[in-house]
Amino acid sequence: MKYTLITGASSGIGKALSYQFASRGQNLIITARRQDELHRLREDIEEKYAVQVIAEPCDLAQEGQAENLYHQLADYDLSVLINNAGFGDFSMPWDMDLTKATRMLDLNIKALTTLSLLYTRDYADREATLINVASVGGYSVFDIAVTYCATKFFVAAFTEGLAQNLQDQGKKMRAKVIAPGPTQSEFVARSSDNGGINGDGLFAEDSFITADTLANYTWQLYDSDSTVAIVNADRRLMLKSPVYPYIRVPH
Ligand SMILES: NC(=O)c1ccc[n+]([C@@H]2O[C@H](COP(=O)([O-])OP(=O)(O)OC[C@H]3O[C@@H](n4cnc5c(N)ncnc54)[C@H](OP(=O)(O)O)[C@@H]3O)[C@@H](O)[C@H]2O)c1
Image 1 (tube, rainbow, N blue to C red):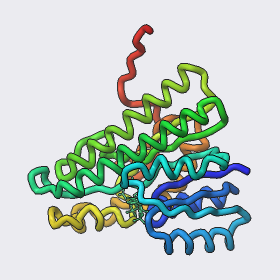
Image 2: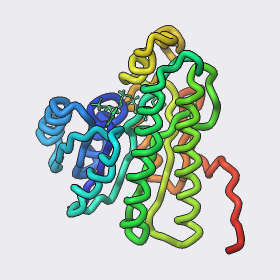
Image 3: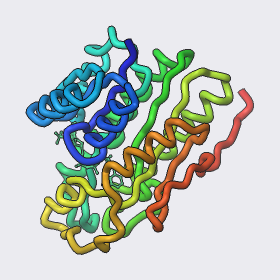
């Protein structure tokens, strides 16, 4: 039996991705910290769709937890891994809470890289797809979220590079990156919880898409031959080739 592993499934985009992939007949392994939310989601999805859902609570920002989670799931065939868990922070660099900043690096970069590399090691020669969730802030720096954007530059550049490594070597596994723009979720509230800049009024109401639309865009990326999907200012999906320069060094 094959499974799609989705991180950050307890709310927002990850929750919508869980419904989207289940509606396409994929069994799920869902993870996040909030156990109750995961269990409610599991029950609801299993009631609606003929798929199996496994809930694995985990704090991915804790040292060693991403690796532990991956090893706990060693017996499952993970045909898709979606690294979606992440958070932001709206504040100027000199006002930033250092604890929040380092947790952001631990989750947005370290946990995502650990899971991606372990997955690539095991699945490079199999029919498998890695989808990493970056941001439009992974392709442009926004002044109110420089540190967050830099974490997403990492996600975008790392995933694009990995995708090209896999293609160059004729590997079966695919790696893809989705870059959402403003999307309805808990993201803005969590990015504003630092007393820095309140994000409530930052974006026009009509600049947001729903998490369900973003999940549908992610399925379109999954179903395509494209490596990159960016949600543009018109809230439309743009399927693209890699954006970052990629230089092949003789070796
Ligand atoms: N919404 C946007 O406008 C937007 C735009 C661009 C990119 N993104 C990206 O989209 C992704 C999903 O965010 P979202 O918008 O859906 O926000 P969200 O509603 O806040 O969801 C974030 C998810 O990550 C999980 N998470 C947070 N800290 C975690 C930790 N330490 N360990 C494990 N899981 C953790 C949360 O669950 P628990 O709290 O239960 O752990 C939640 O399920 C993020 O990578 C975000 O950067 C969002």
